[in-house]
Length: 194
View 1: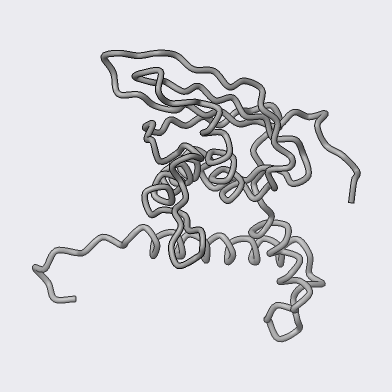
View 2: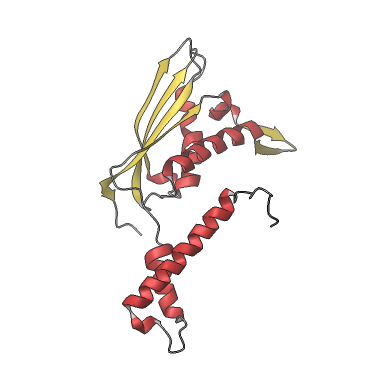
């Protein structure tokens, strides 16, 4: 780079990749200091040692602690309703673009709230949903399926493990309506089912 030109900041993707490789390098170095069996005589790393370090330090998922909730808020749109999500064309049923955009908005907010953590598989996921509505025309129960589908795609837990702790609504006249979603897992909600 020539002098005098401003340095362009690294994009978020490049920075996260750089951070990931730094974590891998630091984990490998620390593991080699602690366990000499993972270091080959010529100074390289054994395949077994690399995999052990990656599994224990880098690739191991960071779980949301049991009992801790994750909350998000998204604007209420009519396309979240199951009655307004699909259209028929050419003899097939399609998900409307607006409905997919509404699901993507929930997914984006949930990813930001999770901060790289994941929910534990095969444990009950509790949903607490509060729907603000501007009039009595919308039906909050019709939002449940769309919200569950959007959430399951992000947390990677099948929606058969979902339980609804609360589905409530309130009427707001002067504000923009929104949907507040809260998710959590209990410590005693696991199972040994295959």
